[in-house]
Amino acid sequence: MVTLKSERELGLMRVAGKAVAQILDEMIRMVEPGITTGELDQYAESRCKELKVIPAFKGYHGFPACVCISVNEEVVHGIPSKKKTLKAGDIVGLDFGVHYEGWYGDSARTVPVGKVSAEATQLLKVTQESLMRGIAACKEGNRVFDIGHAVQNYVEPFGYGVVREFVGHGIGRALHEDPQVPNYGPKGKGLQLKVGMVLAIEPMINAGSHEVKVLNDGWTAVTVDKALSAHFEHTVAITPNGPEILTRLE
Ligand code: MG
Ligand code: MG
Image 1 (tube, rainbow, N blue to C red):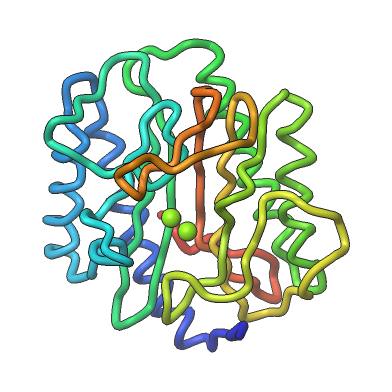
Image 2: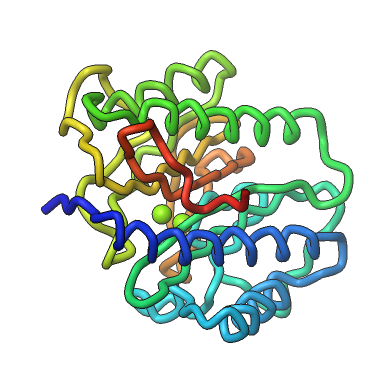
């Protein structure tokens, strides 16, 4: 079932979204060679307590941490660890969500660790831009697949693969609500978008084949061809004035 959010409910989702943006910003400032993914996760957990929001991912289907941290060929759902140290040349995806008074926010960014290759820099730039193009399609009267079409149409000419197995989603009282929002698909198809819908738009783009597999830890998704992968996400409300990004600081 697709739910429409009232103005009061959107207000609570803005609080959740701002907390996500704030904590993600802070984690990203900490990213440098030598830090462990476990330290980043621990920092996010302590900041949730201070900002009085609840981490959304910890315990979700048994996920063991607050942040999904995915390095290089890891696509999504990497498990943070004090034994996993970031090094110069890596790219690291931080996917983070919270809830506040029962309302969720969800966002992700992929950033360089120290100096990275030109290939990695381009992948990050193109994936971020594909998110913005997907968000631009989040307009009343458009259809769900218009979002994925905008993403796919932009990234595939670079020779990149759009991940199929994981998709964006509605969000609100639950982290994952209907509808599913694929990052690919035919223009003009799917559910019609209405004011009050809130969607997490989250392209996962591989610098190679779109194929992914899940490692034996039961969580970490990686590219089958070991190519780099990037992930950007925002929680976006459809308003009479167009898309409003909830997981961004002013
Ligand atoms: Mg997310
Ligand atoms: Mg999400």
